[in-house]
Image 1: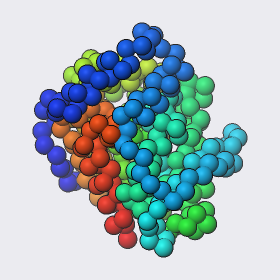
Image 2: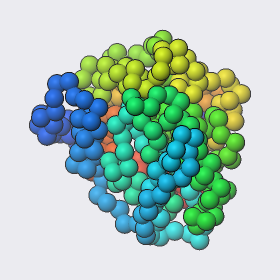
Image 3: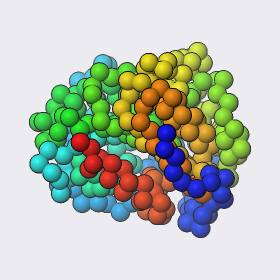
Image 4: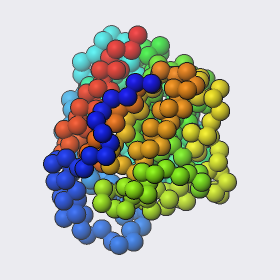
Length: 320
């Protein structure tokens, strides 16, 4: 396994410190005990306020495809500049399985589309708490199967399909890669939640989850409670990809795992990268010191978020 990045224990860099200060002012109106709808609105506001500038794309189209429990909304992006048959990227948004949406992630999807010269298929899976595990996972699997079958119709290369997700979307992306029969060229897991188990014991959750660095350990546990139908479901690899057998891990594509040095989820991302490597998967782990959870979503304020988007774009363009 290749590991890049400086010491994860560094404090916040100047841009991150400024962003944290801005968040405290800009979102002072959020209720002390926000509802799910409050949190959905807050994440969308943050993504628009702090996200990357809208990158030019050739077109955006909303579609619905058949799913296991009804139509699944997709938002599809076509690159303004691309090869004749560009790669296809299935994007699975984060937000604790509950609060992300295509509007909040449009700028990130535009950025991936432009940087990677790829067709991006963004899946809006059924969200918690209205829909419990495995609803979101089943929708993401269905979206990948559809994207693979329709890649040529979309103008993409069916031999160059990648999957990415951030946070809870990284959890879903990792699980999809373990379970799918689609031949994938790359998985990109961006500060993923890798364990929803009640027994998860990662040092960074306790050390960094007290609220100083945006994401709290209590937020992670609340998201897991909203997502899982029972605590026992958290012991399934579909909910906790790190619990998968080596054989399931070995079937997954080459991986780029991105973690943030000040993220409570840092250690589980690193642990999953190690498990993939032990199973024989080609893995690169990029740890961005001084960065917080969400720094790619907030790439309008965090230069290293833009750097990671550019690096992901290079990986996509280089797919053989």
